[in-house]
Image 1 (tube, rainbow, N blue to C red):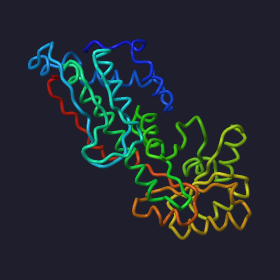
Image 2: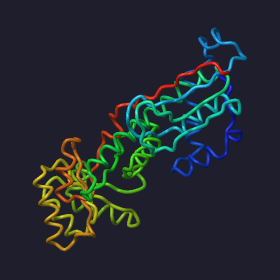
Image 3: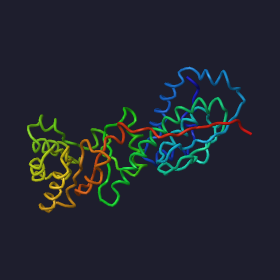
Image 4: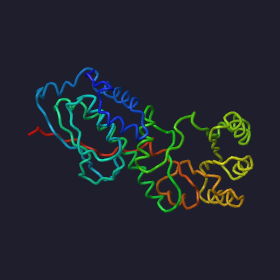
Length: 306
């Protein structure tokens, strides 16, 4: 594999920026190293054969469609890993910026060989994460004025969870649980295994009293049961719109509005966004934000310096 810049030699402001965004810089560093090793197991044969060692180039990373960008800091990290202090990254817009076709989101300058070696890895991160942010921003806009907020899920690409959830935040969405450890969610298979929705809820509550516990219900009878048991976070799974609206009214009638939160989930499409939000639910969780998002079209065009 190509020689890469050690972690301690990377720009400290870039690492601090990643950390401020809720990412672990060392974990991101390791992730990008793995991506580079996948793309350049030995050397970039085409660039070595066609470009002289002293050739320098400059170029712009530009949006080729409208959307919301994210992951530009990760892309910059990939460039610095390949080129160290030989690369200059300037004009980088903040993650979360809405852009139009043709907008330049980042400028690069340095040895042409290294820029082309790092190009695909850098763009893969920025394009994918900008796709997540763009999809999220569309949901946020669709829900504007309803009071409902969009949540992501654990349906993320393996090893990409923290990055994808970061991109959701860049798009204005909220993160659901990060893992199976930071909060509990009682789902249908837990209910079956525990012998009922209330026994499952009480088992988790007694075992982990310090954790938040959300319970998935599929009908109003289950909802009444878990509310009576004291559950304050409920996921309404695959319910018709009119049943979700009745669930909201039930919470109101019981005097639990403002204390109990209701989350709609299960096969929700963008076309139904406002319809579901109009029921009065607090959250809408959307697995498609991360598991099947379309990449955002970013391109890097280089030319010789001078």
